[in-house]
Image (tube, rainbow, N blue to C red):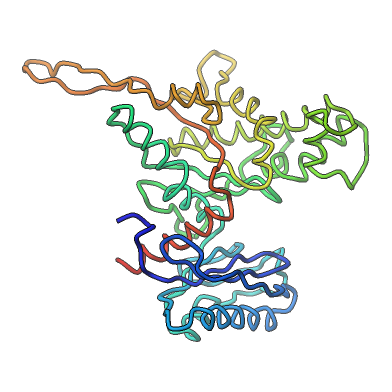
Length: 363
């Protein structure tokens, strides 16, 4: 049964540093208008009261329809399986361990599932995004090849990530699987990768390359400068996105050798993929100094229709089983595809939260 056929109703929360947005999902779709309350992140008691109030409002809007679970993404660090939130930078009132999941379960009498946003983004793309899209195209081309793993990347305020392996979230023993932001940066000396692949990185690089110190310039402004749609140093703007892409490509090479999966990029900066994707692919296709490829698999740009067609092409052929009359199918062309989210980051996170709750309820 597809996620669209699921009947369970799940309460959802989009938890930001400024606002909390509450709703409910059924069959992978929102069924209640979003309800907003301030996060009050510097005041723990008020913040928790707002969470209770928000979910109570949604339950009232549901009327006779009964929710079976609560599921949402919340910033880390956290002990996600046990619903305990650690010390948060963007919600400073959360300190010393806050048992948010147990509080919600006690108050509403239904299971409460909390996960990392990067994890749920990857899970949403695995359920209703890039993963099923590519598998459907492979099937349509007569290929028996199916992808079961995906790496989700979120480019925005930070560099987030999530991993789905064989249909399951890779959370890790300490709820820290997929913390890719802490990987080393290729382009900055002894600094984590996030500092070279996020919003502030684009601003930092443009300032350095152009010599223009304008704190009001957003990544959108720098994107438009690179496109020639706004006045500014066009070459420096493009170089800023090139540097971001080179750094991200290096991260994806490391992930590709360990996870071996499709890659899907989301987050606010994914809208500028046309500027940074060429340098991502160049890095992933690069060689070490002694001549070996950085990746065994061939890398394909899934934002390019020609490359996507090559990626889903059926390359299987028959080979004979020695000393028998039997043949088997063999594909000697390992491939990794890198794409950009079509369903959107927020929708993917919500879909991931819903699907995760349903999977837990059905176990």
